Amino acid sequence: YGHCNVPRSENRSLYNWVRNQRAKLESNDLAEDRKDRLDALGLDWKLHPNAGMWQQRFDQLKTFHEKYGHCNVPRSENRSLYNWVRNQRA
Image (cartoon, rainbow, N blue to C red; front, side):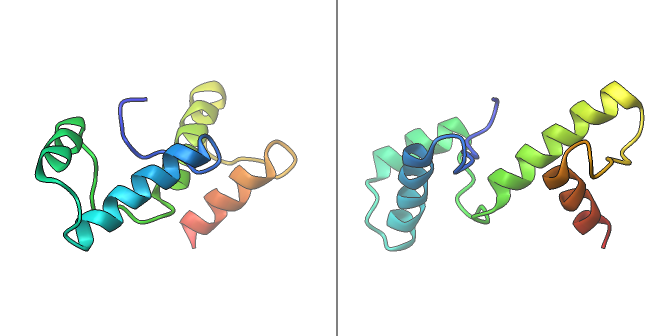
């Protein structure tokens, strides 16, 4: 994957664990050694909760673009990706 942005839809328990680590850091309840280890992985501490989904849709769009050479996703092809692209353009 190359990142620590776990999509909730892919692994809900890991997503929740990462979210809890962010909450612990914010409340000064995360041990320094654990923060250091997560920093070494490149964890984005201020990540928006939907950022994982954004990355997932971006990766889908990238795959679509590589296959078709454009980003005009037909709604009939992939409705959720179509809606995401439409919202990015808005």
